[in-house]
Length: 71
Image (cartoon, rainbow, N blue to C red; front, side, top):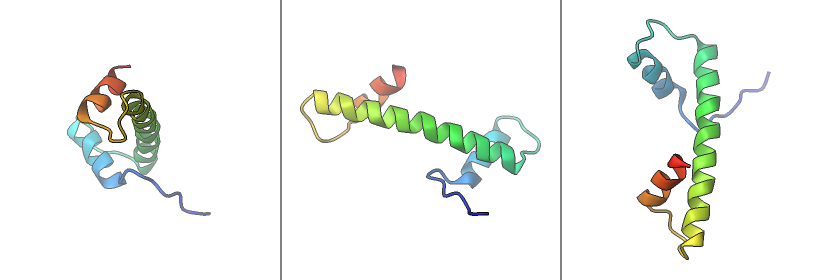
């Protein structure tokens, strides 16, 4: 079985879940959470890129990220 490469490191994701109150976290839960986070962050990044392009810039600014996350 081929190993799936993740953009977001799994160890910090596991720590986020544990810091949120979980006593133990399964590897499947970490994998699922990582996949969902990746999908959400890719949508925000795409929207932020559209916002910066619409503003006539090539650089994504903090405000673009915040605006994209609100939408």
